[in-house]
Image (tube, rainbow, N blue to C red; front, side, top):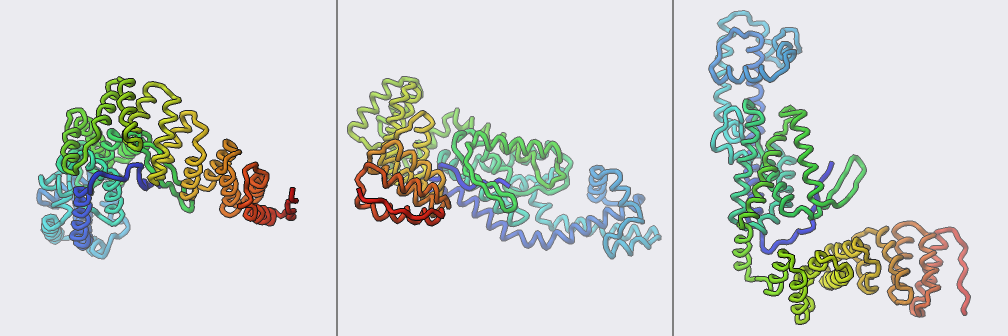
Length: 500
């Protein structure tokens, strides 16, 4: 099973109150309806089963229009063999009522039983939360287009939908504001229900849940943040694997899976796959419309005005130059701005994009180093490591030693010990005469010995530290202790170094 854990942009400009409100509303409605539905459904299902059994074994009986419509719909959908089996008196007994009704031969008694069941059928239909507020394609109530979005059948159904709503919803609310975002959400749920009706117009199975609207959020997320990486957990039995992948890879794959399951199983799986597909497509198209018509820009102007923040004019001008392809002009503007405000991260970020678009790789690498250093200084590990990855992808191999060492420590702090050891080793080789190389070798030795159970590698790193040309009298006792521990763990007799 694949579970999204988070994505790379988990911060907003202000509290996502609409997303919180939607989640709270779903949870409150769940608490208000869940146990009532559990109380209602067993009796409703039992009466429906009795109606079907009696109608199958005695097709001559008269039924009210609503009951007859229900029976005919089930008969039309059921395989011929299944309906023939239901009409056979030799089949397995369903319950005590089934055993009793088989012995009745009197036509009047049978009709009276059907009349009683039909009355119960109608009464339970009128009282049922699912029949009245979930979405039933064969006879949809206008209010159910909205209410069905806030009903959930169980805890896993609710938690799954709310988690996806949180991940995709709060970042879209941050971009679209507190007017566009809720309107989009409600329209998306309605659109998903309409597509579900088109895919199965005669279905009498109630559809419920926020998944259609949430699928629309996923479609909008794909259009709005296609390159944003999503942290995923894949697990199967005892196996656990974490990985990151961009939205443009993960979300279309999810959509294709929904199309596949919808085509293969239809409604038989108990999941409204086509409602998910419809919601996703609606969300993607709506996001394009919101972006192209300038609605998102207008929303951002309002948001920035309310939070009292506006971008520096130089950054705005640099961004406009980037969009128009005036790279040299944008670079000149931002360099002038950075001469006054050297730590302006937003300016450095736009400047780096300008260098990349201009294909000035050397300047791009230098700009990435500066941006990485600022993020390291701010202790923003995720973004700093992303900067380092982009630096490496562009061909950079000599990040300044002090910055590189801090990045290694950030990787170690995330418990990615293998990668941390590799980076410590690369740092030591790149700067053999710098004190950071000695610290890198000691850290690599410590991780190899204590975290990775690789005493031979640890011994190699500690010996390299002992042979380093960097003065290390203050670290000598640590080095010797590390060598001794590594040799003991590796089963090598300890041989203390002779004094020069």
